[in-house]
Amino acid sequence: DAGVIQSPRHEVTEMGQEVTLRCKPISGHNSLFWYRQTMMRGLELLIYFNNNVPIDDSGMPEDRFSAKMPNASFSTLKIQPSEPRDSAVYFCASSLDQREVAGELFFGEGSRLTVL
Amino acid sequence: AQSVTQLGSHVSVSEGALVLLRCNYSSSVPPYLFWYVQYPNQGLQLLLKYTTGATLVKGINGFEAEFKKSETSFHLTKPSAHMSDAAEYFCAVSSGDSSYKLIFGSGTRLLVRP
Image 1 (cartoon, rainbow over the protein chains, first blue to last red):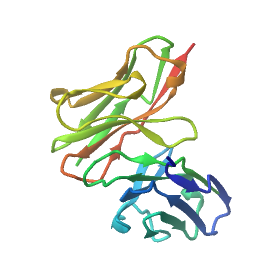
Image 2: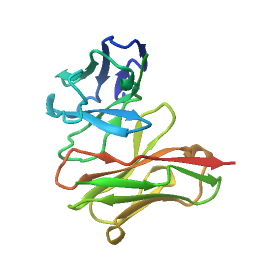
Image 3: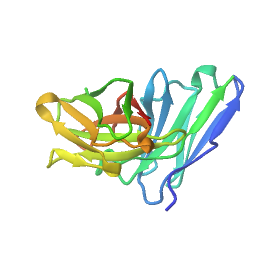
Image 4: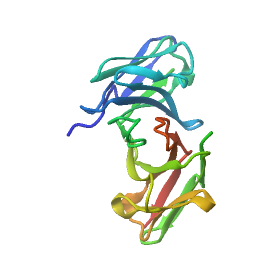
């Protein structure tokens, strides 16, 4: 079975540019999460969707960050404009229904973002 | 508020030796507890979880963890380390009230010496 698919795996961009990260969750999973991983802050939850609806975006750092889930099989995380401090690995994860099976998240391989 | 503390950012063991990775949690409600493993350049994978019932939980690759409420601990162990166990391990907690939020510890990198 295909797991969570993220693209791109690596992105290098210059400060001020727009960055779009993409995620395809596992088919049949109702919950989707975006996490950011850095050495300094560890794993941070940015936003959580359930049935394509954003439930909690309190972890989104600033207005420069936005996330969408137009359908059950696709989500995007956009940063505009990007800044060097946004450099991190961004993970997408999905689960069957986080309200029912708390914690069994399936992670993608991550998108490593470097902003110069 | 819930939190997780992992003692030791790095643990080094010899191949064949006991692995012990420590995790203490703080939760005002009965917690769900998890261990995830991250291999280099990969996402996290679930090793094992505790929700209710038996306090000794067995996971994949020979790992197990014991929930000790009195000590607020959920330490991860494996009797005999293998080179392939070298990875980063994350303890995580969520409340038992259908909360979606999974709070991760800062991680422990396990090094296995030949």
